[in-house]
Length: 167
Image 1: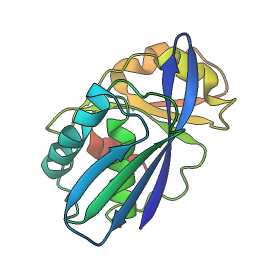
Image 2: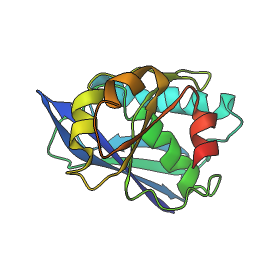
Image 3: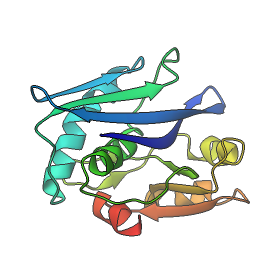
Image 4: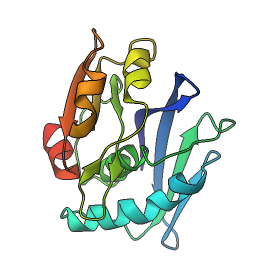
């Protein structure tokens, strides 16, 4: 099963759209992230796995591949935790999120499923319209920073469970 979640990363002072693609396939259980992930992005699989379990969901015991596209741009930071978690829940059938084509998701997950602040909420909110998105879901601690931008509905959450309930 495949899921595609919209996200973004900050490059300098600008934001770049990133498609977080999750494929869950038969095979030995594994969790691989591709698409030039650096440090905190690679470590995200451990945060995501713990956050899913501690939020009442299951990490599928199958082969999980996460692709961060475009693959030729390095991805930094922990803001991809939330879109990866939502993608896994959607691809595994644990969450029926409807259409997320016009929604950007960002957020670092704590092991208990809490959402922690990210860097770059303002440039990402500014770029949301150009990326074809009219909704931005991110940690509640970043709402004030992102809400100064007109034309995008900014929604804050404090936990993974709150995001799932909204979707």
